[in-house]
Amino acid sequence: RTVHAGRSACKTPTHGAAADNDRDLATGRHGCRNVASQARGHVCIDAVTLVAHQCFARELQEETLVSEGRLIVHRSVYGEVVERMVAKAEALSVGPGVDGAEMGPLISERQLARVEALCQVGVDEGAALAIGGKRVADLDGYFMAPTVFSDARPDMRIAQEEFFGPVVVIIPFDDTEE
Image (cartoon, rainbow, N blue to C red; front, side, top):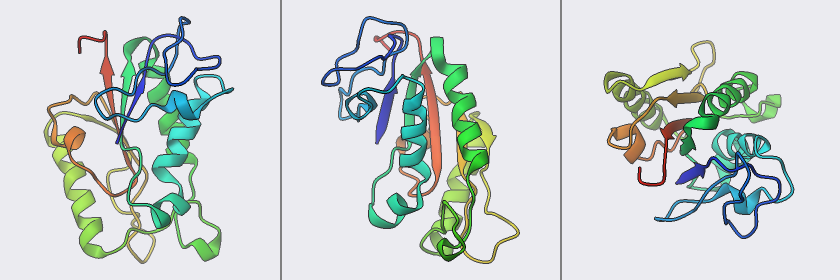
């Protein structure tokens, strides 16, 4: 799934339409999910918290097959969104749920290896690995570090394939033509 973060500011988005201010979450066209429709009443950057929760939360990983994996962010707020997503990823505790961790393991060794391999593809294709990209070395099990890629392009495999793991790919844009 893809989330758009646009350039008009979000005080209270209405029905997914972009507001006229500076940092709104933009449209959900082309099958993309619009965070604005879920972020009513929150300031825009709080949408980063919402998206981070949807990407990394243990209960969502366990109960759904879908998470938000791509963010398409207007360049005017791009640096701030990347910084906030990295901070959210750094702050997460990873480990067994019985120990109170916020993010648990992937389903299998095979899936963990697939996510790691796709992360390496992202690096090889030129995306910036802001954080993560590898399994958590000091834990037994299938634990993947929360991962954030920035400076990705829509033509990259990491922007087109589903990870089914705790990975967010952030793609900048300048105008709606992109």
